[in-house]
Length: 277
Image (cartoon, rainbow, N blue to C red; front, side, top):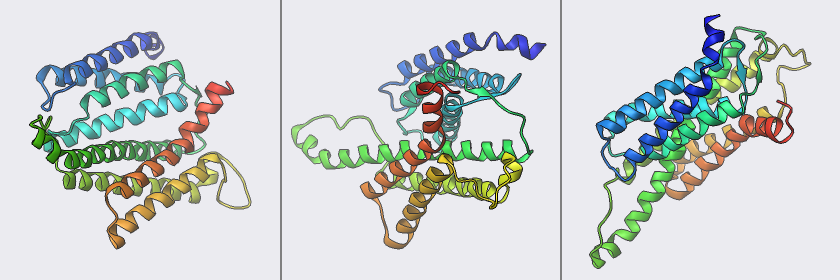
């Protein structure tokens, strides 16, 4: 009864979270250091976001592309908050805040289909690992984008100095951003590998499918494997051939894009375009 009554507050909590995110984005925009007001607004927004996610998983639990994006954004924000303790010059706050606002609203507009009773206790773990890898790769994408900005600034720096222009806000060094990008790619790759292996060995237990093999070929499986191949090639190339710079950035984008298509893209088409959520 309490949970059922709490569901009625989901729209209010959703809009409160989105407004707090947007207010935080306004406060953080153009700032290098996080102000106390910005920190409070981001904290309130993330807390409300977490409550909305929790309520979406109860009575009855629903899941689809909207909640998947919402959870991914929240996990990325959490990872960023932890990382900012050691690297306060990371300039992603207002962009992540806007992303949080958009995704929390998407989860409310497109809540997905009621979640069927799991055929195995392994299914929640399988989904959690998959979403965690989404979040880590999302952070890697943001860092890859910062790498591109840092490289552009390095190329433009001498010209700006000759013209007497301001160099702009301080940023983390390119090598630091590159190291952080590969750190998150490696962590995401480990979780993605575990998720795929779990799907391979426990397909029948996870989905209740009885097939001649232990593999369930589907849209999600194919794109997940393609993403895994891209990230595996990237990490191998980094270790063996010293790949870096824009080659690495493009591969991060490609791998993350394939992973996005593996679940979110498929369910977006199903729920929004075909309206078969």
